[in-house]
Image (cartoon, rainbow, N blue to C red; front, top):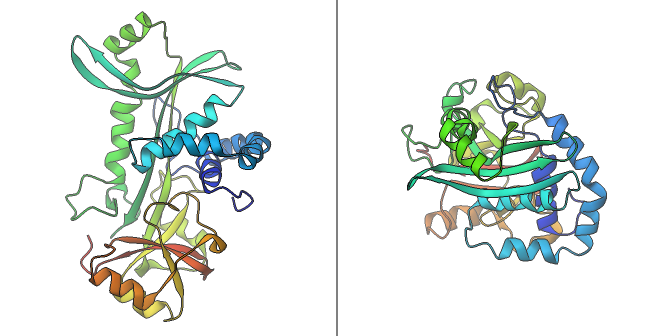
Length: 305
């Protein structure tokens, strides 16, 4: 994505082109594989370059969001792509389902596919998980801010919620009738779950293909990967003069190119800011000079999780 000048356009390109975390799922809804997203990206490439020449509309849309969570940022990128794609009509976005005063949930997107002549329900999510113990098991993948193994932010729980609730809510009889009264009849659904898995440093291998042996079988074979390590491992592995860019408000989707980095930290700086609580662990770091097949890592305290 380094071919684009605007960070927002790089993130947009990543949102469309990146492989999903999960695709090998038995479900009534479609979980597209990496090839489908790559095809969407290739079809959109010319348009993306046009947006990159004048990204003001996209950047204004993103900066105007009241909800600053990364998931909403991700949804807005997809909504912008959908509204500019001649194949699709975006009929509803973040549709609150309220029936007889009862709030039953929300539908991320309802779109009309002009090629297939179908009305589709799409659920989107972007998630980042750190693996522990037996990484083949989805229940051993936790969000970086899970304080303990009882944390609710787990890969298996997210997938179950998508399968059993979010993706099928439009098929519930009450909801389907409520939608029909709005002139909407859902023909199919899809789940778009993207992000990155951070494998434990104790399992470190330089060859990324070997990570397939450590991945949950439900994962897309092309899912994006990196590593997490604690402060002791970080101190042992990285040289004192290596530089890093803490990824706090940006760079979680597509990496920030080194020439755009205004302030970098060496290893000593990272420890000082962590001890002073100026930045809190877990902390995602962008390597300013990617090496050893690494471009970013998650750094945690010794007692995480």
